[in-house]
Length: 238
Image: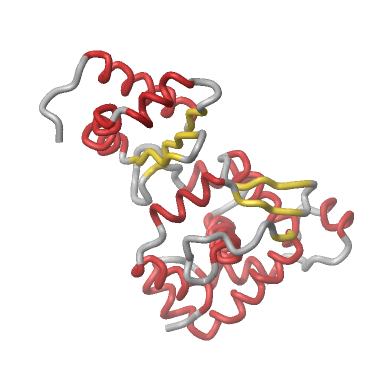
């Protein structure tokens, strides 16, 4: 797009990239000068689009006061692998990880709708209500699981069997004390999402999504084809 960049523009872009790679985000209040250079200088932004984003297999997402460095969905560079995710979510095997993925899909569908619309549909969801949503979604796709597994490469049946093996929500304090129930499983998943700045978990009862999550969904999962695949996976519509 541009024939040349000044030394100041290149240095600013590189400093921003280093901070984003280290922290995952850059806040206006902490780095006002760098934030303004990215927001107001198209050449600094172009360095990211043409150099840093392809190199890092990531995309910079901008909100009013924060820049986020988010891996592309198929990135091998900044993304976690299965082993790392199991460790971070304290899961024993990939079956539990597939179950966690399904919980996350159901969580997103509750905030953005089954079609993953641009607007957020609710302020928060209770953990106990999310448990019911996950159970209902698993039940709705059960007749079509074989086809969905082929289409998605996702071991849905094993995930569903693991979900059914865990105790349902009943009385909160007893649920939180146990490590082998659905409520505690959702808490583990949400604790990981909170550590990534994707949700806020309040008193282990209420789940709120963050601005970062909104930006990720709108930038990576808003395409028609992606929406259709996600809708199939959580509703069993074929």
